[in-house]
Image (cartoon, rainbow, N blue to C red; front, side):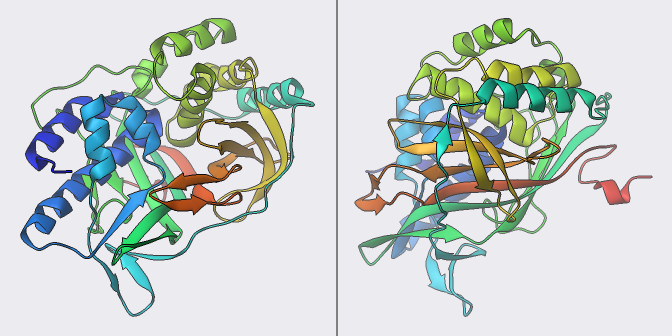
Length: 355
């Protein structure tokens, strides 16, 4: 497939803010980096490519042409860097795997009520104008890598990811070696490449936007279904993913944060997995839901005693073929562990640098 990379960049810029909360910035920067690599590949064709297994959410959220562009993106050359194969600046290795926990519907409402109560009781300062939400996590993802026409699954090494986002959502910064080779990271600030400042919405909310959402679970769920209509493989799975995105890489106000769990309890198909492991090896209990179309189960992992959110992961429960490669049950397609979530006074400031 031949792709006009300039058209692709322009199209993505006009739609990137429609992606789910914690993924829209991630995939914007990743796609822009990959488009850059495509331009280089046109001048000097690369012998290898990778296909991210995390891309389906991007494709669902974008118009058909943008989805086709995303699916056809070619990444940089995969070479032997001395300590294993590298994809750009990040080492890769065999696909991540896990032991699949057994899901159960027993006790789902009770667990989510306990999590909601713990969230309501925890300290939860507000984000003032001029301040930034800072989130540091450890992440890894799995992809299809093709070298000399031979494809196989591989995973990025676990790495540090840092995101800053202003209260109004117009300023931001991302440092993630899976997205960009530069250790300095890249801006996420608006306006976009066309000079537009998109209005925040449920799929791409700012903190200020989140303060205006209803906290009644029925009203909140109705809004989620309405605003995500046509996205995802099913309305219920998309609603679950939307809430999960808010938990992972945003900072919902206190009342909304507590309400999100009661809202999730109303989504059909939600289960409990009694033993799940986040990206840094912390064991907890997971609130989960399986996408019957892709065979992936999305898991939100909580500390079993304190009910604090630890992170999330997606695991393959049913075999699925991607680019001719079988993704076996037990494959971890993405995993994330929240290390720090804080409010800071400046862009690229960390909590240790504050005051």
